[in-house]
Image (cartoon, rainbow, N blue to C red; front, side, top):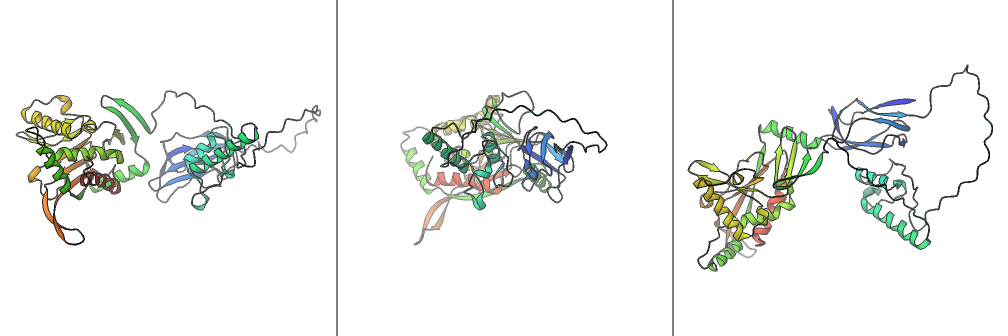
Length: 431
């Protein structure tokens, strides 16, 4: 008899949940209380157990879909059939089948490896992540036979690796057949809607497109209530540039009349070298589609004051330029913006912005984002201040980095990590 399973309440005040992944497929036999799917709310990821045992005949939605609490979620055949009719006549006994030859016994799993059921049972009583559970299913490994080394016996990818290694070693020593079945190849992709995360190509390199999660959408909503439009926050960090300034003076002394380096190309180098530690800062946010596009190429906007007002010309492939190339590029786009000779490619398509008022930069500032960018880095003036070195005060050259971030996409910890990476490179002169 087919039974309908509706999505249960997964949290107080939660009206809907986003489907993260199915842990079972239509046609699978499942046990009562077995986890069949993972959903997420603005609070946490939650495994959804089945209230029935039987065969899964239908499931609702695909990963990324929003499903209302109480909506039909799955259908399960309990394999019991309809109640028998008491008045029905008993059927004639079927003739006894001819005796069959005994099936050969399957080779046992070597005792030096954890015993594998060789058929995935989808055990829901073990503690693990959805990714580990899905991987175990693809390898047809019963997680009930895998020893977990994590907190509370939680099973990690490492534990699956050790299980497989032990099984392979046992096979090699015993000469028996494979104890762990080879996973089937993945089916060829078919046309359909794009997944929640995918990589697309563009004229400016690769773009990773991520659909915002339920939690990220909830944060976006809250931030928009606090700051309508673009809810950004500013983060200011003090950086000691004494050694960097000494290196810059030395490089300029050796220039022999060539181009003199300002501090800005050094900051640009620290920025592009730090982006891989926080890729979300080099991104654009599409609020209508609730997607964040993370760019492979860094197209750095340089804020330039002109007679007509502020312009932000763009340096393409900023991540590929050394200090001298960065200095030349900054000078070129600034001059092109001021004299009106900038090309269209130099005026559009920035993925993040660097802004500086030079000697007029003040001690700190709160740069305003250039939507749809999610990050802007502000450079303030260098000042000399006494700094305690553990034994006494000494004069050091200090500068503040004033940065702003779109709080819908970047949280304080991620922002601090990115700015700390820039600070580390600047102070160590790792440019």
